[in-house]
Length: 395
Ligand SMILES: Cc1cc2nc3c(=O)[nH]c(=O)nc-3n(C[C@H](O)[C@H](O)[C@H](O)COP(=O)(O)OP(=O)(O)OC[C@H]3O[C@@H](n4cnc5c(N)ncnc54)[C@H](O)[C@@H]3O)c2cc1C
Image (cartoon, rainbow, N blue to C red; front, side, top):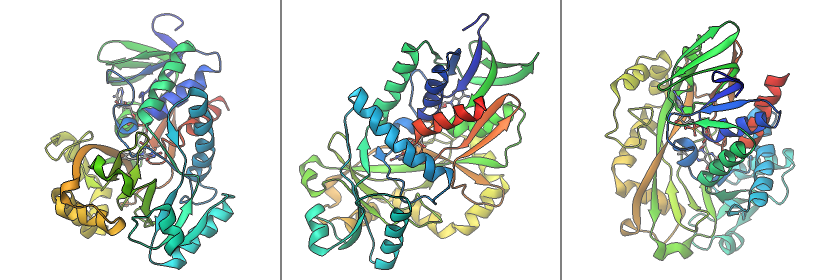
């Protein structure tokens, strides 16, 4: 801090993207403050996710998602090693009955220079995942698992040790431009800065509006629910089994993951949440909900994916259906073996035509930069996203 709560940079949001950005800024020998409404870092998307270190195989080559996820994965692994954070990188199998689709994904891995990706079938597949139901798959060795809560906490610790400041329980309510400085008003205090970076996840569209922007997208909250498979069944999965993703709805389709601590989790599904932080069906915020249903893009999205939306809701309300989805991927699990665990809510940007924004989205304001879409794999890519935001700002 210089004086009077005045900093060179202020970052809104102590999630994995905000903290990575703050960490990269702090390396520039400038003053940086992170403003966070919760009492600790990573309480929303960054601490409530699948914990997968994504390989980057799915994303269109040359998109920022592809470039940042592959660079981000390498930076993350380096960081985890340096900080001695528990992780495993033993690969995943993407399964499908259509060999052509798997071969297309294999071609993509070649385009992306990913070593060791291969089609596995029958006994070879079963030697990797003996309980797999499907017998055709693509083995992707670059995928791994980590607990992102630990990663977020490590970023926060590093940032503070380097001289950065984090103000918790500080919910930002107003932003003004005064004499060339940003004046950022929270529920406790006011902060001034030369430049503002908005990494507010589920609320990033609202923060952009506070900064006089008119974003073309709205953040729609999609809850992802998980079940844990009983520890007595821990031998049925070695690493991860993923169904092949639908390119139009990449976050659909539950997968099975052996987490960094050895538990097996199934999920997440994708149901419209009735509140930005709607972690349960009963979390309803009428202000958030009204904004969602009156957004023109939401109606179009609803029409396009009506059936998918209904079946996701049905599965969410019916444990029997959820277990059947699990049984399509793995043998040896029944209703008694699964127990619901805390969910996460994705901040998914949707445009006015009802399209789900696929790539990461950054918009510039007056002395500000707004991260308006940072969906999966933004946790994997976080160090590369922070690095790229800082290079955008400095240039
Ligand atoms: C169910 C689910 C599964 C996922 N699985 C994976 C995965 O396996 N691998 C992967 O790489 N990615 C995964 N992701 C994506 C990843 O978790 C997110 O992309 C990433 O965490 C986004 O980080 P963030 O910092 O942008 O947002 P967040 O972590 O949501 O942080 C935003 C922060 O802003 C704060 N904030 C909001 N409004 C205000 C305000 N007004 N004032 C002050 N602070 C404010 C919030 O409290 C929050 O702490 C998953 C996401 C979900 C939801």
